[in-house]
Image 1 (cartoon, rainbow, N blue to C red):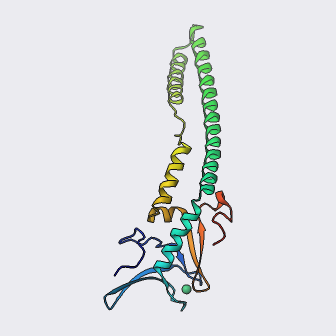
Image 2 (cartoon, helix red, strand yellow):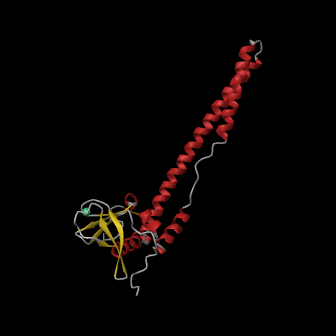
Image 3 (cartoon, rainbow, N blue to C red):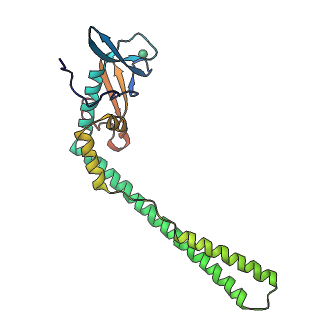
Length: 209
Ligand SMILES: [Zn+2]
């Protein structure tokens, strides 16, 4: 009875919100029952007159697309670009730490100067109070700077494992994470755009798109 390929989707739709009609309008998912059969399809939200498209076709396209997109070659590309990103991130953390260290040194110097003023003696009481207050603030600032943690890191291995999991089980989350949009062309063709275009380039997904 059920010869429809299982796509891992139950109530929610695998590609909802991603499909666009040839006229440019979004296509909405729709379910209808006829003679005990359930039909799932996408229709133009502006009812421009172009035909509906069967959901099964859209779902299969998305799943095949993800399978191609997460090819070993592309997984390598994604990981490499993440590695580059991480490299930049590390530089950023180093810069960040250098700036913090410099600020701490400056403040420690100011603190020392104030200390010197205090120990030179014969200062009016209000100046002493003022210096004391400045020293208190500087001490707080130094403590705050020392406790400033750099942003958290991630590992490239974790990303690789995660990509493989997505490939093995392309669910609704994976589809929405990796697919930007699906445009219907010439009534039945589907043009898929990846969210990773900047990483993978225009030909990131083989020649079928
Ligand atoms: Zn339309």
